[in-house]
Length: 485
Image (cartoon, rainbow, N blue to C red; front, side, top):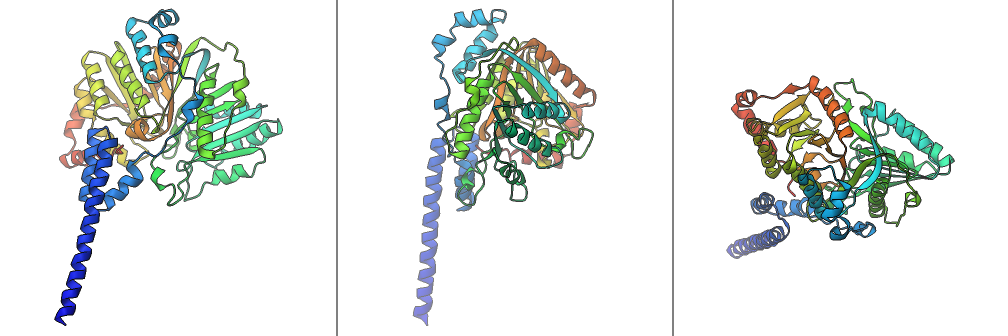
């Protein structure tokens, strides 16, 4: 009996030693990977702490959520521009002769970050909500003769989007090919994508799903989403911005379920840059090489606006959109206007905004009073006091939820697209924005922002300080849930 008890103890102890050994090996191995691949100090410390304090679970979470495995060869399709040849100071001085020197330097900075040329002779028209945007989109799709390309994070199947399905059928009858790319999580409804099934039933319509969450194969990619929204018809007309396809974008007076948003109708040669992004995403999602009909389109002069498309994603070494935003804040001399549904940037951008306000630059941030994600309602408030005390004006808009994204500097430089002001957009999502120089467009968007401010509430330092202690603890705790990257 004694021998048996001793034997059981030895075996039990042996298993414990093995488990501890495996834990130590995994923890140190995972930590080594974190140290080698995580440039952000806070992110690295957070992951290492999780790995050591949560045996096995921390390592599993890091493997599934912390490692970027998305490496794409899409950049091979893009025309890489030699900065010294294409955008020397002399050329910038000639093309943008009326810009002050600080903006000419900013253009050089932007091209060093992402060497994409400005396309000229474009027209851009802002469209508010589905009420304005959807009829124009549907009309363009129905008139398509060659090709319809659509990328959308959310594509619901409802009373409004069924109109798009009917429009696709018309386009196919006209001889156009239709390709629709949806995100695997954005369109996921109770573990199925109803829109995918509906589209697959239409002859002549192809549907691609970006990183579908097949368990367990795709679980390591579940945190990396294609958040882009664009629509390209016959290579001549495009719709680009942050608006999804859902009836919620039409219910603008429904305080509970309605969504306010903005997108842009674009015509001109910059559409070629949008097409390159769609080609890359389609090839990655579907696995079949694709070259758009739009490559053969000769663009006529549609306007006078210089534009370039800035794509970003976890397959880039550095956060391109975040760097462009930081550079734009630093170059401002008069006014900064930010309209965003989610305002949760990291400390580097918060500090840059504070510094701008301290230089007596007029800084305004317009963001919803209530988010569509309850946790974010608390997290965003944690940064308000420091910004307000630096001179930043923060306006909170009432329901319905405002999903609009606008960034304007000095009433001339405009940055719009799919990216939010949070670490998910800056580090995890595949996003795309337009960089634009246009006083006229800046004026239109500023007027739209002014209308939003009429119903908004200006947040004061007094309100922030009066917030109960436990609620301040809650807000700062939720801020820690900002995705590690």
